[in-house]
Structure formats: structure tokens, C-alpha cells
Image (cartoon, one colour):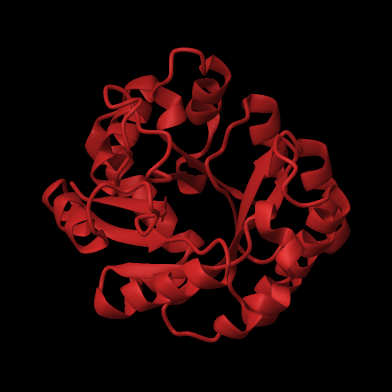
Length: 253
């Protein structure tokens, strides 16, 4: 039973051990694929470097909406790397105000264009901005493959994403007691569009909530979803890994 962590920040300062040790611990927990996320130029470069040293690690390149004000020209030149499988994470975050909303929308649209130009998957972060996220996607048109990372919505938002052809990536939030809507979305999402992630070092699943998250815990997310759906964890491990290859084809080769 092997798991895929489709979204982790294992080079983040909040991680308590090195990236290499983090990967080793996760492999012992039956995780065999990792996508390490870029959120600006520095983290994108570091993710590419890490992926170049590990056969089971891939990288993304993008600007988190917090850093949208930096401009896509700071990261776009990194996209041709063979270890890069996606553009992002990018999108809209209206909870914080680190970048102006109009700048976020402009830069989000530019990320969509880059994903199309390079035939890469688009990885979206959206927080308190569902309608504007859908509006930008509808105006620009989705790339061939789009992932809503750390999906926080319920069935209504899930249906809108699925109707647009996107994948939904669920995190430790499905294990939180106050996340009934999110669990309902995980129950109704088709298996071929359902991904799992840790978003390490954030959002550690129960029973590790409140501690730094790590990719070794991604199986807890998958097992929680299996329990919700009344399925064996092995089925969810297999289906989410297969869906990850659909969403990020290069990780399957």
C-alpha cells in the first residue's frame, strides 16, 4: 500500500528535521511520491534542487498569492526544468492582505497562461475567494490539468470545481471535528479526481494536530477518507496515487 503526497513544503523553516530525513521517514511510512511546492523564486529553486537529488521527488514553480506583488517574471524562467511538474501554488487569498486583490487576480491569470504555455498542471490556492477564483478560471479557461490544493470547501464548491474538470486535493482538514462540509466533499468526490496531501508543515491530521506536519502522515489523510467512504485504505492509496499520475503525468514515468 503506497501513498502519494501531492503537496508538501518540506523545505519550510517550520519543519523540525531536514528534507532528506523527512523523506526517509515518509518512505518508511509507505509514501513513494512527493511533490514539493514552490511559492516564490527561492522556494521554487530549492524544490527543483531537492527533486534533482531524489528520484521520487518533483517540484512546482509559482508565486503564492501572498507574494503575487513580486510578479511572475521572478519565477517564470524556472519552468523549463525537467523536474517541474506544475505551475503554482498560485491563486487568491483574501484572508490575509499581503498582496492587493487586483494584483492577485492579475498574477493568477498569468499563472494560468504559463501553465498552458508549458503544458503543466496548475496548482491553485484559494482562501475566502471562491467566487473570484471561479471568475478568473472561467475568464481565462482552465489548463488541461488543474488541482485545487488543500481543498477547504464543501459539496457545493466541490461540484463547481469538478464541473470545470479540476482535481480536488484533500488534507488533514478532513480529520478535524469542525469540518463536516469538507468531509462531505471527500465522500462525494469521484475517485479519479480525488488527491491527498499533507501541506507539510501545516494542517497535521489527527492525532497529530497542533504539531508540525510531515509527508509520513499522508496515509492518515487517506485512511480517514477511506473510513468516510466505507472503503479499505488500500483502495484509497491505489486510487489517489493513480489520480495523482493523471493530474501530474510526469510522476508516473
